[in-house]
Image (cartoon, rainbow, N blue to C red; front, side):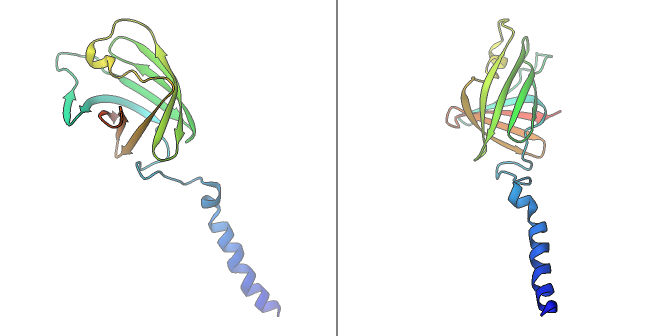
Length: 150
């Protein structure tokens, strides 16, 4: 009888310890990403609008850089556009969505290309992150901001 109990209890204990990650959701990676976080320093490379790719103007020596840092639930944004310093915070939501809770910065007039990089506070965006590329989709997917990891 003791041997039978031992044989039954050991697989249960091993099974519970092996599934700890699933029970605490520590390893959940969304289907739109190769990691559960957006943490990193990201340089804006292009916009994709209605199928048309618009790269950074060649005559500009500045970049749009966002540094995102999160704990897989909430995070902060810091960085710069061509002429402004920006900051904000966000929540990572299920289904590959990010809600920008706040976003703002200095108020110097922005060139048209980098002006489009400003995120809207209170807005949800869909994102994809794979192999050093972050895509933030907005306007019901009609426009995509394409970032490369620095």
